[in-house]
Length: 342
Picture 1 (cartoon, rainbow, N blue to C red):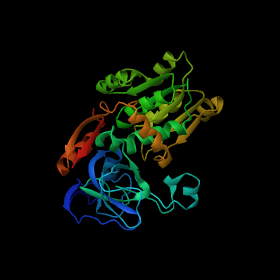
Picture 2: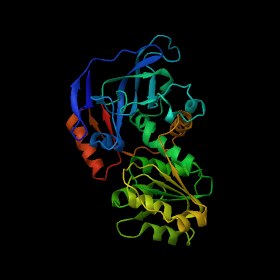
Picture 3: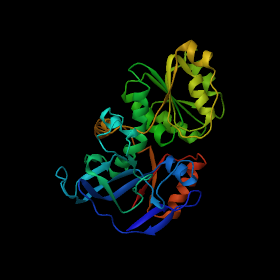
Picture 4: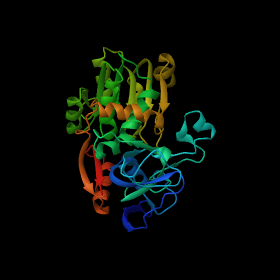
Protein backbone atom coordinates (compact mmCIF):
# COMPACT_ATOMS: atom_id res chain seq x y z
CA UNK A 1 0.00 0.00 0.00
CA UNK A 2 1.00 3.64 -0.30
CA UNK A 3 2.00 5.51 2.85
CA UNK A 4 3.47 8.97 3.51
CA UNK A 5 6.28 8.59 6.02
CA UNK A 6 8.68 10.62 8.13
CA UNK A 7 12.15 9.28 7.33
CA UNK A 8 14.24 11.89 9.11
CA UNK A 9 13.26 14.96 11.18
CA UNK A 10 13.88 18.21 9.38
CA UNK A 11 13.30 16.59 5.99
CA UNK A 12 10.14 16.47 3.82
CA UNK A 13 7.84 13.49 4.23
CA UNK A 14 8.25 10.79 1.58
CA UNK A 15 5.88 8.44 -0.23
CA UNK A 16 6.66 4.76 0.28
CA UNK A 17 5.28 1.38 -0.74
CA UNK A 18 4.86 -0.75 2.38
CA UNK A 19 3.05 -4.04 3.12
CA UNK A 20 -0.59 -3.84 4.14
CA UNK A 21 -0.53 -4.51 7.91
CA UNK A 22 -2.40 -7.51 9.30
CA UNK A 23 -4.56 -7.18 12.41
CA UNK A 24 -3.50 -9.21 15.41
CA UNK A 25 -5.76 -10.45 18.22
CA UNK A 26 -8.17 -7.73 19.44
CA UNK A 27 -7.16 -5.49 16.52
CA UNK A 28 -8.87 -4.33 13.33
CA UNK A 29 -7.64 -3.28 9.90
CA UNK A 30 -9.24 -0.02 8.76
CA UNK A 31 -9.35 1.25 5.18
CA UNK A 32 -8.59 4.97 5.53
CA UNK A 33 -11.24 7.22 3.98
CA UNK A 34 -9.99 10.50 5.46
CA UNK A 35 -6.99 11.68 7.49
CA UNK A 36 -6.65 15.18 8.88
CA UNK A 37 -3.38 17.10 8.64
CA UNK A 38 -2.65 18.51 12.10
CA UNK A 39 -0.26 21.28 13.18
CA UNK A 40 1.36 18.67 15.46
CA UNK A 41 2.45 16.81 12.32
CA UNK A 42 4.42 19.91 11.29
CA UNK A 43 6.16 19.80 14.69
CA UNK A 44 6.94 16.11 14.20
CA UNK A 45 8.39 16.72 10.74
CA UNK A 46 10.51 19.59 12.08
CA UNK A 47 11.86 17.49 14.94
CA UNK A 48 10.31 19.65 17.70
CA UNK A 49 8.59 16.59 19.15
CA UNK A 50 10.09 13.10 19.05
CA UNK A 51 8.75 10.48 16.62
CA UNK A 52 9.91 6.92 17.20
CA UNK A 53 10.66 4.52 15.56
CA UNK A 54 11.66 5.91 12.18
CA UNK A 55 10.67 5.64 9.44
CA UNK A 56 7.03 6.04 10.53
CA UNK A 57 3.73 6.86 8.84
CA UNK A 58 2.28 10.09 10.25
CA UNK A 59 -1.39 10.95 10.72
CA UNK A 60 -3.50 10.71 13.88
CA UNK A 61 -6.89 12.06 12.72
CA UNK A 62 -8.41 9.06 10.98
CA UNK A 63 -11.80 7.82 9.79
CA UNK A 64 -12.62 4.93 7.48
CA UNK A 65 -14.26 1.53 7.21
CA UNK A 66 -13.49 -1.81 8.82
CA UNK A 67 -11.60 -3.95 6.30
CA UNK A 68 -10.63 -6.97 8.42
CA UNK A 69 -11.19 -8.18 11.98
CA UNK A 70 -8.50 -9.66 14.18
CA UNK A 71 -9.11 -12.75 16.30
CA UNK A 72 -11.61 -12.19 19.09
CA UNK A 73 -13.16 -8.97 17.74
CA UNK A 74 -16.94 -9.30 17.82
CA UNK A 75 -18.08 -5.70 18.37
CA UNK A 76 -17.61 -4.65 14.73
CA UNK A 77 -18.18 -6.10 11.29
CA UNK A 78 -16.48 -5.56 7.94
CA UNK A 79 -17.75 -2.40 6.29
CA UNK A 80 -18.63 -0.52 9.48
CA UNK A 81 -18.00 3.24 9.32
CA UNK A 82 -15.57 4.17 12.10
CA UNK A 83 -13.28 6.83 13.50
CA UNK A 84 -10.18 6.16 15.61
CA UNK A 85 -9.14 7.36 19.05
CA UNK A 86 -5.46 8.00 18.44
CA UNK A 87 -4.03 6.80 21.76
CA UNK A 88 -3.49 3.04 21.81
CA UNK A 89 -3.38 2.28 25.53
CA UNK A 90 -3.17 -0.79 27.80
CA UNK A 91 -6.34 -0.08 29.79
CA UNK A 92 -4.88 -1.56 32.98
CA UNK A 93 -2.05 0.64 34.30
CA UNK A 94 -2.57 3.21 37.08
CA UNK A 95 -3.20 6.08 34.68
CA UNK A 96 -5.65 4.11 32.55
CA UNK A 97 -7.54 3.00 35.68
CA UNK A 98 -7.72 6.64 36.82
CA UNK A 99 -9.21 7.72 33.49
CA UNK A 100 -6.02 9.54 32.46
CA UNK A 101 -5.10 7.21 29.63
CA UNK A 102 -3.11 9.84 27.75
CA UNK A 103 -0.34 9.08 30.28
CA UNK A 104 -0.55 5.29 29.85
CA UNK A 105 2.77 3.67 30.78
CA UNK A 106 2.85 1.70 27.52
CA UNK A 107 0.57 3.91 25.40
CA UNK A 108 1.46 4.69 21.81
CA UNK A 109 -0.04 7.47 19.74
CA UNK A 110 -0.73 6.59 16.13
CA UNK A 111 1.27 8.75 13.76
CA UNK A 112 3.92 9.32 16.44
CA UNK A 113 4.88 6.04 18.10
CA UNK A 114 3.10 3.61 15.76
CA UNK A 115 2.11 3.92 12.11
CA UNK A 116 -0.69 6.39 11.47
CA UNK A 117 -3.28 7.27 8.89
CA UNK A 118 -1.36 8.96 6.06
CA UNK A 119 -1.84 5.66 4.24
CA UNK A 120 -4.42 3.46 2.58
CA UNK A 121 -4.80 1.17 5.62
CA UNK A 122 -4.09 1.26 9.34
CA UNK A 123 -4.17 -1.36 12.11
CA UNK A 124 -5.56 -0.26 15.48
CA UNK A 125 -6.78 -1.98 18.68
CA UNK A 126 -10.54 -2.54 18.52
CA UNK A 127 -10.92 -0.69 21.84
CA UNK A 128 -9.79 2.48 20.03
CA UNK A 129 -12.52 2.27 17.40
CA UNK A 130 -15.74 4.30 17.57
CA UNK A 131 -18.69 3.95 15.24
CA UNK A 132 -19.09 6.95 12.94
CA UNK A 133 -22.77 7.88 12.53
CA UNK A 134 -24.07 7.97 8.95
CA UNK A 135 -24.86 11.67 9.38
CA UNK A 136 -21.16 12.54 9.75
CA UNK A 137 -18.96 12.51 6.60
CA UNK A 138 -15.59 10.77 6.86
CA UNK A 139 -13.69 14.07 6.58
CA UNK A 140 -15.52 15.46 9.59
CA UNK A 141 -15.18 12.22 11.52
CA UNK A 142 -11.41 12.37 11.06
CA UNK A 143 -10.92 15.87 12.48
CA UNK A 144 -13.29 15.13 15.35
CA UNK A 145 -10.60 12.74 16.59
CA UNK A 146 -8.04 15.45 17.30
CA UNK A 147 -8.82 19.11 16.70
CA UNK A 148 -12.35 18.89 18.07
CA UNK A 149 -11.62 16.30 20.77
CA UNK A 150 -8.60 18.22 22.06
CA UNK A 151 -10.61 21.46 22.10
CA UNK A 152 -13.34 19.76 24.12
CA UNK A 153 -10.76 18.35 26.54
CA UNK A 154 -9.28 21.86 26.95
CA UNK A 155 -12.73 23.28 27.75
CA UNK A 156 -13.31 20.46 30.22
CA UNK A 157 -9.92 21.04 31.86
CA UNK A 158 -10.73 24.76 32.08
CA UNK A 159 -14.05 23.81 33.73
CA UNK A 160 -16.09 26.05 31.46
CA UNK A 161 -19.58 26.41 32.92
CA UNK A 162 -22.82 27.80 31.44
CA UNK A 163 -22.91 31.59 31.50
CA UNK A 164 -19.13 32.05 31.53
CA UNK A 165 -16.94 33.94 29.05
CA UNK A 166 -14.20 32.29 27.01
CA UNK A 167 -11.29 33.62 24.94
CA UNK A 168 -9.84 31.43 22.19
CA UNK A 169 -6.32 32.36 21.03
CA UNK A 170 -5.61 30.91 17.57
CA UNK A 171 -8.43 30.28 15.11
CA UNK A 172 -7.14 27.31 13.16
CA UNK A 173 -8.65 23.84 13.16
CA UNK A 174 -8.70 23.64 16.96
CA UNK A 175 -9.90 27.20 17.41
CA UNK A 176 -12.86 26.91 15.04
CA UNK A 177 -13.93 23.78 16.90
CA UNK A 178 -13.32 25.41 20.29
CA UNK A 179 -15.62 28.32 19.48
CA UNK A 180 -18.51 26.01 18.69
CA UNK A 181 -17.82 23.65 21.57
CA UNK A 182 -17.63 26.54 24.04
CA UNK A 183 -21.09 27.59 22.86
CA UNK A 184 -22.32 24.00 23.21
CA UNK A 185 -20.96 24.02 26.79
CA UNK A 186 -23.11 27.09 27.51
CA UNK A 187 -20.54 29.90 27.27
CA UNK A 188 -22.27 33.30 27.27
CA UNK A 189 -19.69 34.96 25.04
CA UNK A 190 -16.66 33.71 23.12
CA UNK A 191 -13.83 36.00 22.01
CA UNK A 192 -11.77 34.81 19.04
CA UNK A 193 -8.20 36.15 18.81
CA UNK A 194 -6.08 35.88 15.67
CA UNK A 195 -3.97 37.98 13.31
CA UNK A 196 -5.54 36.70 10.08
CA UNK A 197 -8.62 38.63 8.83
CA UNK A 198 -10.01 35.58 7.01
CA UNK A 199 -9.96 33.52 10.21
CA UNK A 200 -11.66 36.30 12.16
CA UNK A 201 -14.43 36.41 9.56
CA UNK A 202 -14.96 32.67 10.02
CA UNK A 203 -14.97 33.06 13.79
CA UNK A 204 -17.60 35.79 13.60
CA UNK A 205 -19.78 33.60 11.37
CA UNK A 206 -19.70 30.98 14.12
CA UNK A 207 -20.94 33.46 16.72
CA UNK A 208 -17.67 34.63 18.26
CA UNK A 209 -16.57 38.20 18.91
CA UNK A 210 -13.48 38.66 16.72
CA UNK A 211 -10.37 40.39 18.06
CA UNK A 212 -7.63 41.38 15.62
CA UNK A 213 -4.34 40.81 17.42
CA UNK A 214 -2.43 42.34 14.50
CA UNK A 215 -4.17 45.70 14.86
CA UNK A 216 -4.67 45.89 18.62
CA UNK A 217 -3.49 44.55 21.97
CA UNK A 218 -5.80 41.57 22.49
CA UNK A 219 -5.51 41.71 26.29
CA UNK A 220 -6.54 45.38 26.40
CA UNK A 221 -9.35 44.69 23.92
CA UNK A 222 -10.72 41.77 25.96
CA UNK A 223 -10.58 43.87 29.13
CA UNK A 224 -12.37 46.72 27.34
CA UNK A 225 -15.11 44.44 26.02
CA UNK A 226 -15.60 42.85 29.48
CA UNK A 227 -15.64 46.21 31.33
CA UNK A 228 -12.25 45.47 32.87
CA UNK A 229 -13.24 42.08 34.25
CA UNK A 230 -11.46 39.69 31.88
CA UNK A 231 -12.63 36.20 30.89
CA UNK A 232 -13.43 33.15 32.98
CA UNK A 233 -11.45 30.82 30.72
CA UNK A 234 -8.87 31.29 27.97
CA UNK A 235 -7.56 28.65 25.56
CA UNK A 236 -4.10 28.98 23.98
CA UNK A 237 -4.06 27.00 20.74
CA UNK A 238 -1.09 28.60 18.95
CA UNK A 239 2.05 27.49 20.79
CA UNK A 240 3.84 30.83 21.08
CA UNK A 241 5.19 32.42 24.27
CA UNK A 242 3.50 35.73 23.42
CA UNK A 243 0.02 34.23 23.10
CA UNK A 244 0.53 32.10 26.22
CA UNK A 245 1.34 35.26 28.16
CA UNK A 246 -1.72 37.02 26.73
CA UNK A 247 -3.91 34.06 27.67
CA UNK A 248 -2.90 34.51 31.32
CA UNK A 249 -3.10 38.32 31.32
CA UNK A 250 -6.71 38.40 30.08
CA UNK A 251 -8.10 36.26 32.92
CA UNK A 252 -10.74 37.43 35.36
CA UNK A 253 -10.67 36.67 39.08
CA UNK A 254 -10.72 32.86 39.43
CA UNK A 255 -9.95 32.60 35.70
CA UNK A 256 -8.37 29.51 34.10
CA UNK A 257 -5.84 29.52 31.25
CA UNK A 258 -5.67 26.20 29.38
CA UNK A 259 -2.47 25.82 27.35
CA UNK A 260 -2.73 23.48 24.36
CA UNK A 261 -0.28 24.84 21.78
CA UNK A 262 3.13 23.16 21.61
CA UNK A 263 6.36 25.14 22.06
CA UNK A 264 9.82 24.52 23.44
CA UNK A 265 10.12 28.16 24.54
CA UNK A 266 9.30 29.62 27.98
CA UNK A 267 7.20 32.66 28.86
CA UNK A 268 7.16 35.01 31.85
CA UNK A 269 4.39 35.22 34.44
CA UNK A 270 3.96 37.86 37.15
CA UNK A 271 2.95 35.51 39.99
CA UNK A 272 1.29 38.04 42.27
CA UNK A 273 -0.53 40.29 39.79
CA UNK A 274 -1.50 37.62 37.27
CA UNK A 275 -2.13 34.56 39.46
CA UNK A 276 -2.02 34.89 43.25
CA UNK A 277 -4.02 38.09 43.56
CA UNK A 278 -6.77 36.65 41.36
CA UNK A 279 -6.48 32.98 42.35
CA UNK A 280 -6.11 32.37 38.63
CA UNK A 281 -4.82 29.08 37.23
CA UNK A 282 -2.57 27.91 34.40
CA UNK A 283 -3.57 24.43 33.22
CA UNK A 284 -1.65 22.15 30.88
CA UNK A 285 -3.75 20.24 28.36
CA UNK A 286 -2.47 16.98 26.89
CA UNK A 287 -4.45 15.22 24.18
CA UNK A 288 -7.97 14.11 25.12
CA UNK A 289 -9.83 11.13 26.58
CA UNK A 290 -11.70 8.32 24.87
CA UNK A 291 -14.57 8.96 27.28
CA UNK A 292 -15.08 12.43 25.78
CA UNK A 293 -15.65 11.13 22.25
CA UNK A 294 -19.24 9.79 22.50
CA UNK A 295 -20.60 13.23 23.47
CA UNK A 296 -18.57 14.88 20.71
CA UNK A 297 -19.86 12.42 18.10
CA UNK A 298 -23.43 12.91 19.31
CA UNK A 299 -23.16 16.70 19.07
CA UNK A 300 -21.80 16.35 15.54
CA UNK A 301 -24.58 13.91 14.62
CA UNK A 302 -27.16 16.42 15.86
CA UNK A 303 -25.62 19.16 13.72
CA UNK A 304 -24.50 21.29 16.67
CA UNK A 305 -21.04 21.61 15.11
CA UNK A 306 -20.40 23.22 11.72
CA UNK A 307 -17.37 21.59 10.11
CA UNK A 308 -17.93 22.96 6.63
CA UNK A 309 -16.07 26.08 7.77
CA UNK A 310 -13.44 24.17 9.73
CA UNK A 311 -12.32 21.98 6.79
CA UNK A 312 -11.04 24.33 4.11
CA UNK A 313 -10.04 21.75 1.49
CA UNK A 314 -8.87 18.20 0.80
CA UNK A 315 -5.76 16.79 -0.89
CA UNK A 316 -4.83 13.42 -2.35
CA UNK A 317 -2.51 10.93 -0.66
CA UNK A 318 0.50 12.66 -2.21
CA UNK A 319 3.72 13.52 -0.37
CA UNK A 320 4.29 16.84 -2.14
CA UNK A 321 0.73 18.02 -1.44
CA UNK A 322 0.97 17.04 2.22
CA UNK A 323 4.38 18.69 2.65
CA UNK A 324 2.97 21.90 1.18
CA UNK A 325 0.13 21.86 3.73
CA UNK A 326 2.65 21.31 6.54
CA UNK A 327 4.72 24.24 5.21
CA UNK A 328 1.60 26.40 5.41
CA UNK A 329 0.92 25.27 8.98
CA UNK A 330 4.49 26.07 10.01
CA UNK A 331 4.05 29.62 8.73
CA UNK A 332 0.68 30.02 10.53
CA UNK A 333 -1.18 30.51 7.25
CA UNK A 334 -4.85 31.19 6.59
CA UNK A 335 -6.15 27.64 6.30
CA UNK A 336 -8.29 25.79 8.79
CA UNK A 337 -8.08 21.98 8.56
CA UNK A 338 -6.93 20.19 5.40
CA UNK A 339 -7.89 16.54 5.03
CA UNK A 340 -6.23 13.77 3.00
CA UNK A 341 -8.60 11.63 0.92
CA UNK A 342 -6.62 8.51 -0.14
